[in-house]
Length: 125
Image (cartoon, rainbow, N blue to C red; front, side, top):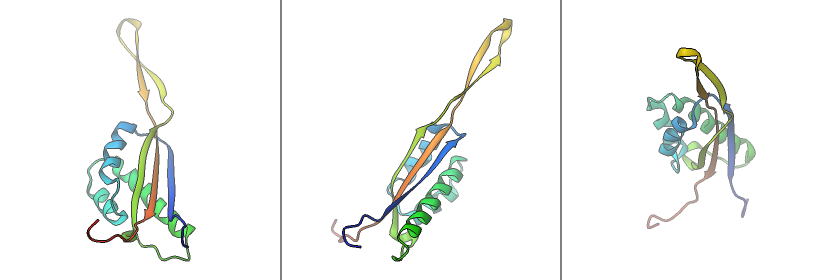
């Protein structure tokens, strides 16, 4: 397993949540251990934390499945990358006075999470 990069990813596409709201939660767990990230997501009051938690759990399961000969626990893994991209926007109209119409944009998101095994570093680093 020398020289092999131990990382895996999970993607949630077409989630009917605005990317701006999801990014607030995603920024809070970037670079943290998977155990700590999942614990923080459990106690966040934002609705987006449920969806991001699912994707982080899926990415952790993917790395365990991909490298099944190596023992990988959540405390050995960390969130290497997490980003939220904008998906398809549904355009709807809201009737307004005097025959007018206001546009309503219903946004969707794509969540991508990459988890990797944390390399052992010295205490001084």
